[in-house]
Length: 109
Image 1 (cartoon, rainbow, N blue to C red):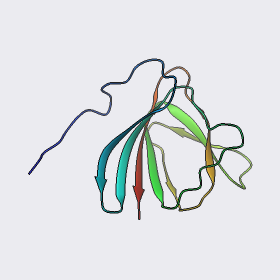
Image 2: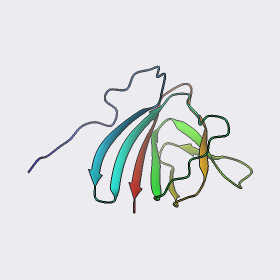
Image 3: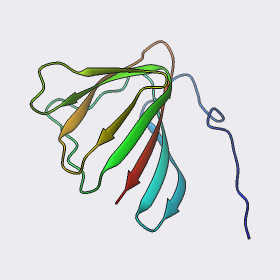
């Protein structure tokens, strides 16, 4: 039996050229990631369209996520979460420029 642990806030640098994605757990039909963004957003015209549902929570910082068909992005602050059904097209409009935004993403199904 292996017992694994860590800290969600460890290993985060102040300035990131790209988002930092770390897989925390993988199992059958499950992947949990820590995503660190710092002023990042989806490229112009890009939409996520994922085959599996996702549950995401912001544990630090803030961000805005726009869903296809909605007129305004949903602003997320610390503690806010979203359940994103499979194939719900969405994009990250912005993430906090003043501090890292730390997300936990649970891909399942």
